[in-house]
Amino acid sequence: MSIETESPESPESTVDELSRELGAAIAEMPEYEAFAEAKAAVEASEEAQEKIQEFEQFREEFMLARQTGEASQEDLRELQSKQESLHDVPVMSEFLQAQNELELRLQEVNEEISDPLSIDFGQKAGGCCED
Image (cartoon, rainbow, N blue to C red; front, side, top):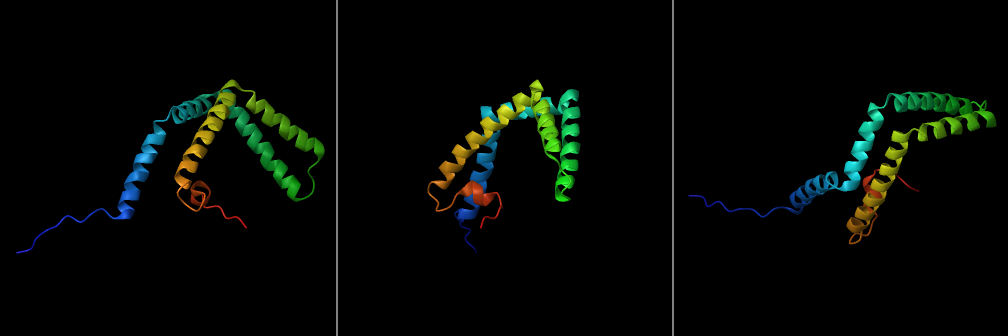
């Protein structure tokens, strides 16, 4: 006869569960909801999509020209102008504002998570290396 005992949750499973709950809670934050709505509006906007494509194509050409030393100050000004034109599209402006507000709120969440740790959780979790 074997007696089955419930094993307590491991710290890993607790962290995994809390992570899922945190993700779900973040998805319900007003800042995230506003961001998701603004992102959908940008994706649905023909004008925004055209300007994004135009900007990205010119940016790619500029980066290649810069690598070969062929980029001029005029090219840089044109790139900046195209970016400003993109940001002037109302749905894009709203998206950038919503993105900024979400990033600020997530930084606050990161600080709360990082407070009991000896590392910046968000920075280390991002996978980026710093020297």
